[in-house]
Length: 336
Image (cartoon, rainbow, N blue to C red; front, side, top):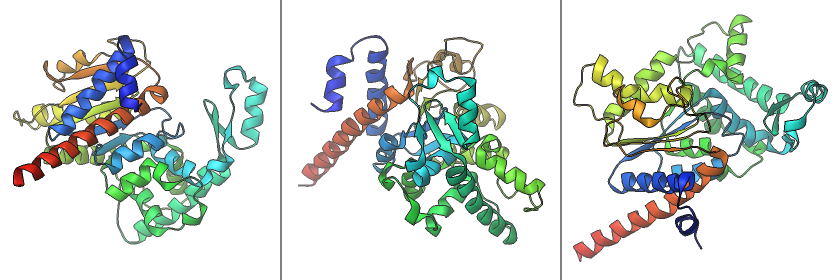
């Protein structure tokens, strides 16, 4: 039984039904010529969401990514240091003394997984520093993701990859030259390293990495150049709030009233429903802000994204590709 068939048989009510409804909405969007923006909050890269997300990117079922700086860099950390990660199943009962022991051993804990400081974070930081210096010398400036793309292009770390490249969503995005938006990059580990090097005078120009305002311009430009774009949000916070504001910016601040609203919306969140919290707000609230319409297909799945997202992704992969193949077959039959 395929994953999509399994879900259709067993996922019939409540959050399970919401998963199916959201996945079907995504398939409908793609089969009607639409595109999808996926936003990544939380620690999705360290949760190795790339295993399922990367194939969606390769199959042209995801057309843009907005993520936190942590998700951007942690996919690359995992790529080069996976074998040295330490998993701690009993993370819920760790004592403060055990946490200090992990810290003293250079192990940064993300829920049940520890990222090694030296061979992941500091190693990548040194390679990025070389790229930042090069950009500065050439009087060039880039978005955060473009420096990571340059790491792929240089192949300087190629011999150190410890997972299959097909399981890296960032590498899939690099191959597809996917637009990536990274608001708030400053609070990431490599963003901290960049600022530290500016303060130490290793770098002279703090604008070598393009700013959040330029990121917003980039989102708006991308949105205007495309049509019928859906919004699939994992978690809350800046990764979701930043790009969804592009539409009211265009419609209200640029006064382009004909700009279409987001064509689809889904959020996976375990946040308590609350109209005072962005992460916990139901989709209807976004209507009042000029982001969605009363007829926009909208879904909220109240669950753990590490469990739900791969299932939705696989459903879309199976069903959307079937639709594409069917469409191609119809075209060929019509030509005959």
